[in-house]
Image 1 (cartoon, rainbow, N blue to C red):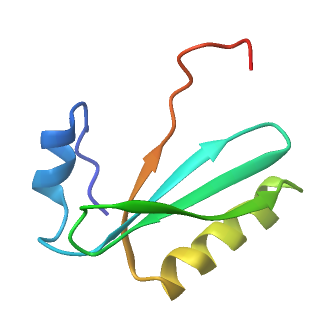
Image 2: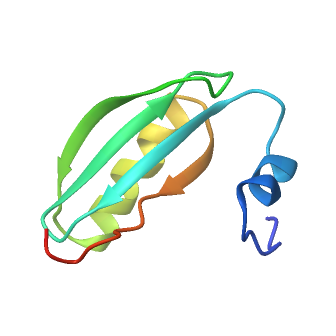
Length: 84
């Protein structure tokens, strides 16, 4: 497991394989929005929205999806405004 600190997209890019899908997560209190990129990181598209349950069930769902779609990295959404 790589424990390097990632602060910029360049840091992330240096740690990832040259090709492979990225999974974008928009973590909400009731749902998790998921998007997947293509293997070349040129475009991402919405994939599905998961209804949140408990942490373990949510984590298992995301791990299963990442494995089945050959995901090489995660990108977490950062809210710019907290007003919804």
